[in-house]
Image (tube, rainbow, N blue to C red; front, top):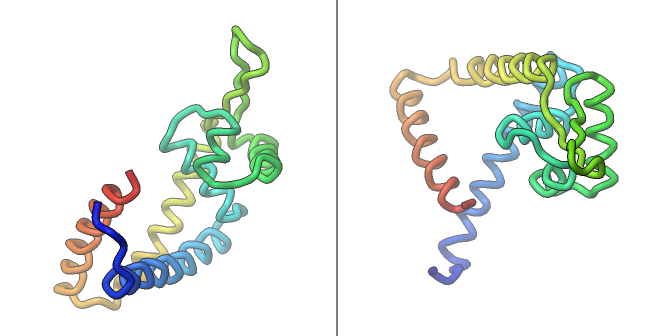
Length: 149
């Protein structure tokens, strides 16, 4: 593995942070305007969708949230019937969390709202720029998957 080189690697880190900030603003706006969810709620639903049934500890680790914060968040989503607690048949101390049908539908609606917001943003691009953006995003996604593995 190559050593971190401040001269060449810091601009890339700054670029990633600026991309995050730009996207986060649009995504957060879409979520807040079209749903009653916070970005943390959406992230919790996505984490469970991507990983399947999980324990509170696993969700907290994926979201990098403290146990007290994740418990409050999950409790709220359970109360809204977006998530369900499943008790282990062999060990009642083990509680798994899964998406309900209502949660799956809500997540689908959130994704649609975010998609509409981002689609509106890309309408200002010329067709060539849109093709370039798609190609570059595909490359960035592949690189990020490799980096984060």
